[in-house]
Length: 389
Image 1 (cartoon, rainbow, N blue to C red):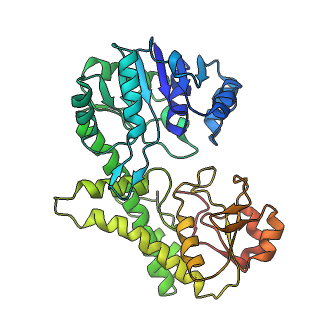
Image 2 (image 1 turned 30 degrees about the vertical axis):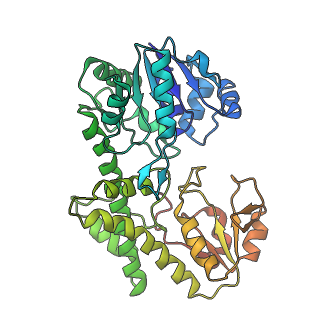
């Protein structure tokens, strides 16, 4: 098939690489730097499998910044543009998706448009009415940062927001390009597919928040959180996954998806969804207060990234902790090798790790790293495993 992918972030690039194993793929992005890297078989994002596949696999993949050449001949057009959450409107900013829909429908009267961006509940129905077409389908992604292609190669499930043959064919193509031939395919209606995405991520946020609040309890009473978590998680109904305390949930999806789901509950009785959103603020308050009780002169932040192995700073929980500490007049310095500026929102970025360790009284690390082993007495973390799960 001829497939066009719009957007070369985690979702778009991982889908483009996946499909390019068996199909002809054109990848459109506004960044010439990204496009040039991809065409040189270099990944512009930190993802081990994407880097490996670009470098070693015979992919039928071409990236471009020229929108005029990507739409006309495609059988499927995958839309993977950003949809950040707007706290003022309580709604995802779907402007980029709507722009692509309009252009793609104008230039191609046959292609099916598969939305992979995160969207609010009811969006597809609204777009089908707006553009007077049923060729718009939502297929949610369940990808981890820095493991996006891996999660496409080994999907937990493939969800399509339609039950027609085009949706079924696309789902089967996804599965055929994966390394999991028995991956379950779920065909449902658009609004149910949108709900699956938001409820899935909100449940993951709930789990993170639960173990973070357990950890706050342990810290307050001087208990060993690891022992409590081990005992709780030994119950097979609970399990030992996704139970490592952190400074809060963050990243591309969980903060905005939980808030969007809460906004959809405007006229529906609820307690739990709102508590999940509020709990993340409370956890950051708790962490900041715990650090401030130690009366540091200078606080160091080791890595702005959300997860180990990631290059994403967006909505990372440690930024919320930083803001709270700085609000109390305590200087904060940052060590982040993936950030190339000298200032991060008013905090000095120290490029030399040895200098960073020497200057900071306390070093905040959402996830531990061996490079901090020589200053262990300075490190403040709630990480029990050295991993994100």
